[in-house]
Length: 289
Image 1: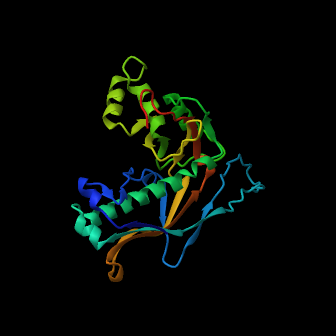
Image 2: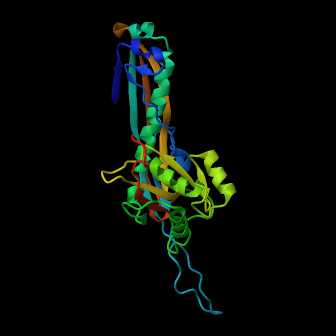
Image 3: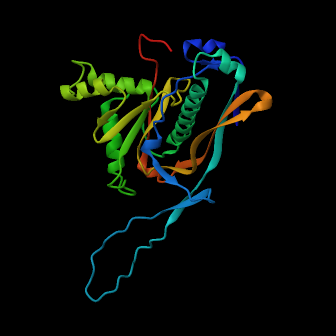
């Protein structure tokens, strides 16, 4: 468990320092896009079955079906494990701070949880067998259409007809995609769609795919990043204990502990319901980071 000791908080008078600088992190992107399955009390592992497809054939009157389809399921095991963090804030730090330190600490723990959950779920992208794009290639709308076609055109394990399909890109990839769609005179994209993308900035809906962005997707040494497009049932999050933050006094330390704990796991349920998106994620021209 990560423990962060905040022993002197005089520097947070300007609203955002908690001994070490509070890092602002995006709210979780992935959780609403995947299948979340609560686990029953006393269980930390579940097996989710998968069934094959069935073929229909012509029949002859009076002749028995000689080749029935075996409908025996295979299964994937998902295991929950405990994750957490703790911040310790001394009474002296409380007295010397002009901010509501406890509230800030709880908020930061929530951000940390969202960051951890996103990055854990992002790790599944590299496990999808199908891939679109290549290192150094700039993402455009045609690749989103290609991913949509690949998922819907899969004849061996077609995606379910219900449920949403989403794509998650690194922020710099999303910038390239949006700039290609929204810069006047640079594309044949209808004006109303351009205006919609400019207003919404971080989310676009293209070819029935909701596109999201996150700065927390890893960019490699060559400025490339692996996003993904997937049906919501492609990736599963199993949850035994949802995130919770508790506050506890330590009188001998003259401090308050803020403890975050949760118990969950994740993995790919159906590999063919997702596709990796490998594209350039270089810093936009004219900027630094």
